[in-house]
Length: 281
Length: 284
Image (cartoon, rainbow over all chains, first blue to last red; front, side, top):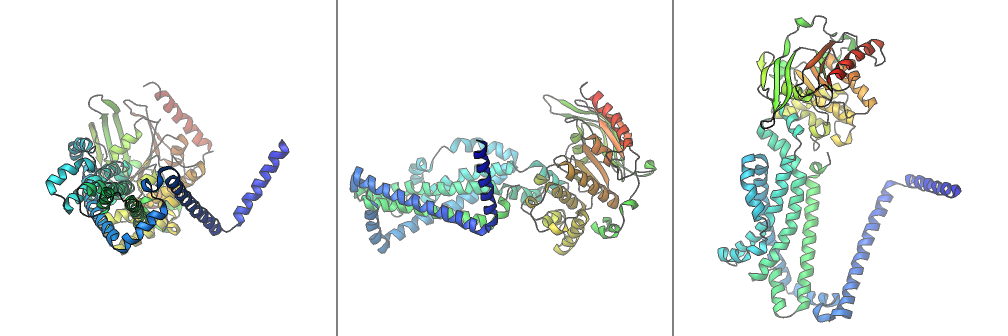
């Protein structure tokens, strides 16, 4: 027994020594390769499962197999209709998200800082945040028709709550002693807000904006389903009426793909521009 | 304004430790920095808590005073009052003859949690420049001033690092450099070395005494560690346990520095102080 455990520890030790001798870059590349490999395996397994479910269980009409989706995708992208729908959806997401994010960020900063404003506005927000963008579609259509403003306002609605809540939390959780330290170095209220509170809240704000981005993509589809003449939601709706399941799947895959890319882009921008504010204290 | 007040670090830099002021031979001659008379502090309205009850203390210019007491006795409350973060409920609290209206860069506070007190998104150098930036100093001026201060605390070679990349002791020295940059009159230190390991702590005591003797600031240092107080202070004010805490004992430590923790003369003071800490702790 003792000899076995002794042997085990010896191998571990020599293994550790070997790790140390190896250049660090190689170890990092190996980890990266491993991750990429696993992603590829995961996607392949997913495609195989999709194929199997399609062909063996539901049949190619209810769930078109991957190759049917690709076959439908080629003419749709060649004719430009897919690009147009994606561009329409993206522009709505972008406008609604930018407006909602900015509005909620500014309101959140003030609500976190001004007690009275917080106490007055918070109950209303807590009450209203259970209204999903979908629930707002009927009234928004009456207010704004089925034009672009209606889509912007629905994405706006889907964006504001998570940004508001996380911004308020970030402002309120700015360490008291950091503010006190700045006070006795001679900072004014405005300087504390700009130079201490705002940067301290960045990690929270980033989390809120990222959640809101996903929520913006989720909000736009129902809006386009019910009241639109373009966009990915409209494509889904039209394909459903014509029972074109392969086109529906093209739209679904596109929604996943652009959402994923938008999130990656968001993370890239944040980690490039705001890296120093995200460092752990 | 700043240039007039500034004691140029370069000019005092050549002094050795021995040139520093001795523990005030005639303390009464020095001007009073803080005058505290019958000071009371009550927290809360519905369930009032009497934190401080009748504090009397005078702190003079250039003095190193330790506030010693058990946890929760109100040492930090007293320090926050001196800083201006809190207002006294009754009694008199004067800084250089005037009532304390609020925080001021004359009286800079040092916190135990330097990581939270500093700006983690700025480099060591930018942290030191922060106070000067608040005053609207030009880049070149504040750059030079910050370098002097970093030199003084021995952090010059780490100026491009982030606070998260330096040790806890270095972060405390960074807090000191940041304070020195705005040229304060008083250091108010709230258990600044409480979170450090024993070795870094002793090293920081040496560094702090060195800076104190070179820059001749008044220091009020809160601690619950008798030995730390003995190694550092000119005078030690022992506070009784709360509620209704007051100064139970005031001891003058007239020994030369640097003081060795093993010195038998410190041992005698230790027993005397411990007695006061213990007799007052549980009775309340």
